[in-house]
Amino acid sequence: MRLHGTQRINEQGHLEIGGCDTVNLAQEFGTPLYIMDEAHIREICRRYYQSFTQGLKNAEVIYASKAFSTMAMCRIINQEGLGLDVVSGGELYTALQADFPAERIYFHGNNKSAEELAMALKAGVGRIVVDNFYEMSLLNDLAQGMNQKANILLRVTPGIEAHTHEYIQTGQIDSKFGFTLSNGTADRALDLALSSANLVVKGVHAHIGSQIFELESFSHEVRVMIQYMADIYERTGSLLEELNLGGGFGIYYASGDEPAQIEDYAKIVRNALEDACEKHKFPIPKIIIEPGRSIVGTAGTTLYTIGSIKEIPGIRKYIAVDGGMADNPRPALYQARYEAVLANRAAEENAEEVSITGKCCESGDMLIWDINLPKVQSGDLLAVSCTGAYNYSMSSNYNRLPRPAAIFAEGGKADVIVKRENYSDLLRNDVLPERLAHLPMASR
Ligand SMILES: *Cc1c(COP(=O)(O)O)cnc(C)c1O
Image 1 (cartoon, protein in one colour):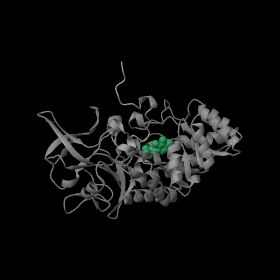
Image 2: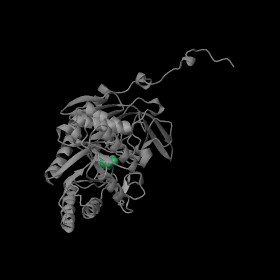
Image 3: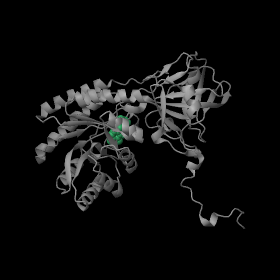
Image 4: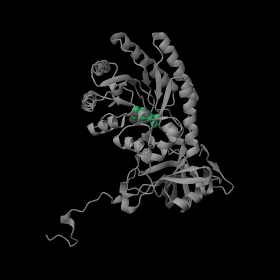
């Protein structure tokens, strides 16, 4: 397993994160456990801030909170000077409860409800990213009713196919998101927005996909979008000043993944921007980027306890952990790959090839196929790396498994940021109707 951030193997041969021995963390907090490396998150935020916010002069970095949304995370993002992107009333509520400044929040989504839009207007979020015609008229009416003007960006689908899993491609024409650029829909949307009394069009937005390794996808996006902004100016006379390029910067999960450096991402965006603006004689707009996965992904590690072991001679050895697709649905959803290490015997030589399965009632509940580990015993601790993004935020209570706790580990200290669910949490919203109040079997 490749080590990330502050991860290291200590003198006892245990995996350590944020100066905390993971064997102690398992004892103190139980497993499964989401361990977030706070210093690593902050370092990545700073690299983004330096290379974009400072490197491009007029730019803003917005954390896509759907990757990992908790109040403590919102606090860190605020402290590091980044903005926040939310895609639902729930994520907006989380941010507001953490006192995140509303004017630095961007609100996305392809089917925002009237309640969610009203909540955003009331809170005074900085930008609402309008995705479709239904939303545009809904928002204009709501803003009118509240005697407000809503600052919006228009989400367009630029027709760029980033090379990634098709479920996380979003820039291609056949997408559920945004106004299509190539067939004139985006032009119609813009004209309608410009003529809507309670909408102020600040700029345009595109998000071409996720887990993208090829930086050329982003420079292509910049060229297409600057051309579009120049066309808008020529056609309507309105000069849009903001270009939101979305997120999607890829990270390392397992061998074979070769992500670029954040600094090179910034450089390629800046060069493409300068060239395209020069070519179209268009003033350089404010650039906004929205990384989610690349801010928290490599900072998260999930710690499990190994239970049952099943060997089918000559075929496969299944090692089962006390979690699975309920806390990490990504392998089942996208065939995502992960690396792992035995946290309590991290310095030992690998001795066998095994496959890691979860405890959910699904044959697809596999976390890692064919991984080399030391000879595994029941009771060993397994640490799966790079689980910081889209794990806790995509977790479920399938099979009525309580969600794990999440902690920030930093400087030898560990703080709970999400409490472990217990059985009574699972029943929090269960209701027994009066007619089911009696225990005896119904007479037939
Ligand atoms: C999901 C999403 C992001 C973040 O994507 P990552 O791949 O996690 O960086 C940014 N912007 C929008 C609109 C998104 O939907």
